[in-house]
Length: 211
Image 1 (cartoon, rainbow, N blue to C red):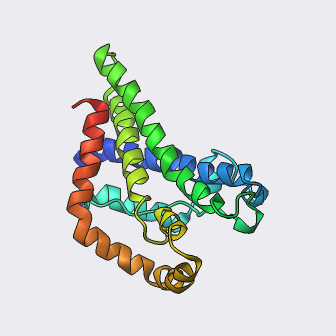
Image 2 (tube, one colour; image 1 turned 90 degrees about the vertical axis):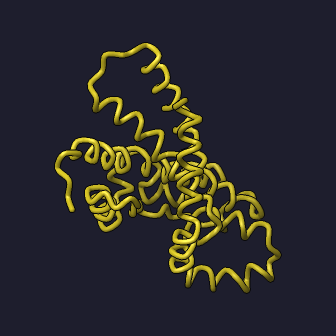
């Protein structure tokens, strides 16, 4: 049931996800692809930090609903960044580098905002509660996106890392199956490994913020 008492933190969480975490993640993909010689994302206006360019209506709606209902699981996504691996300078590693750019950008942001939060707490900065909420959520959600997207299951970024270490024949055999049933597999992974993943994310956040 919808809990009005926690409305402000939830609205801040939604804003952090939609305005910062997802746009930076997709921008990192676009920038890495551009550095690899593929300008497709730039042509489609995705080489930008503007949240509007990465906005997916249904994915954003899912974020709003899952956060407001406090289901314990955040569901949602941004618009996937268009790329053409055929344009990459490094045909062997380019797709992996572009895929990893997203989650690595989130983990880097988590570290940066954890330092900011530690400084705010250390200095006992007289800031409104919503500011502390926002910075804390910037750490939490960036860690969550960074770790979750490294899972080797399509459509997550980690699947490209998996394919990199398989032979071309194995990729040809396995990739279509994983892409077809990836969402079902991902649901199964979440059900089976949800607890350990949550503890891992909580542990990383605790180490970063020092609590």
